[in-house]
Length: 264
Image (cartoon, rainbow, N blue to C red; front, top):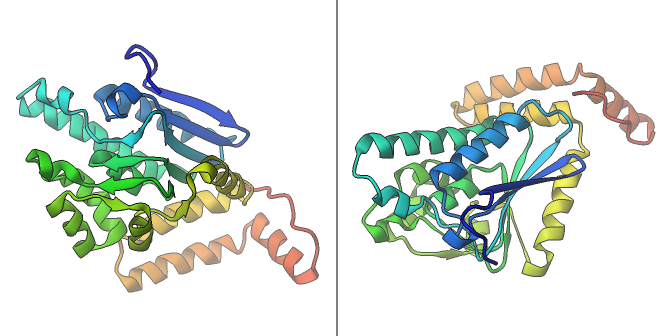
């Protein structure tokens, strides 16, 4: 698939409570240009207050998920301030995924490299086609993938991350699943259906508990073990007082049908 450079760099369509964002720079392998970074940030800002959306999918058009930063754009300036600004905007966009109340699922049909691999790692979940491949390949162009190392390292652990970062070598979908970079791998012809089914399943769960649980999880993952347990304990004690939890527990105990979730 090809697209003219003047087409929108990011598309959005909603499937009920699921928002689907499509990276739309297929002519540039969906490289994360400044415009695409800004478009993603703007969409995340809108989604943050949109209570009708319960889950988000990030997918891509063309023959790549994303090959990372647009190196033609990077090469157009030798000004550190320009490069720093681009990276600050990109890091803020990645952090916005973490801070969204909705779970975000990356749907990877093909290669995801450098900051494209970072985008996969930044998402809460990732469903990959068996044909997808992953790399932090900046080193092959003389550039260690510093900002991608933040998200990738937190997904796969130090030694696996440094293996990817030092070598720039590709890993296949099965390896990415083994190492924790993605959460599911499915045949290419089932990728669309399986990802949407997962998103709809999550969207049907109690939304307040999903949003608060996501925030709690990301926070405790940055704590030491004792503090993490204390934080999670307080969270669950509060959660047990919620209308949804009381209704859900009562339905389980009394063998009633699952209730309609009220929390927002």
